[in-house]
Image (cartoon, rainbow, N blue to C red; front, side, top):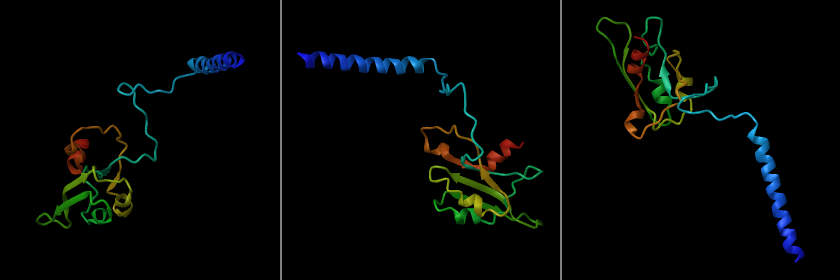
Length: 146
């Protein structure tokens, strides 16, 4: 009989402790962000997908050396360029990133000697289609710098 009341007392005591914690936390400030209506600011060290950097005239800094493509262990970068008639150097014609393969290792950014690519701060990437993660970085650069 004593064990019965002891068990009831232990259960009631546990309930009081739990309710005390709940009551104390009820009045503490909330840290939840209401996602669709509020967004977080990303830290300076956040790594999103890569993006091209433009020069003063809005053209990409890329000289189509291919070092980023060679340094990528995931083989997610495809670039192409052609030398215009009468031009001195190649111009970038295609820069495709397959973000489904990218491991965000940073080898491409480190291998670029021309300050042509950097990590973006974009983090709201959600989709149900694989094709939405194949980025044409040259077109994105043109859209960003009209």
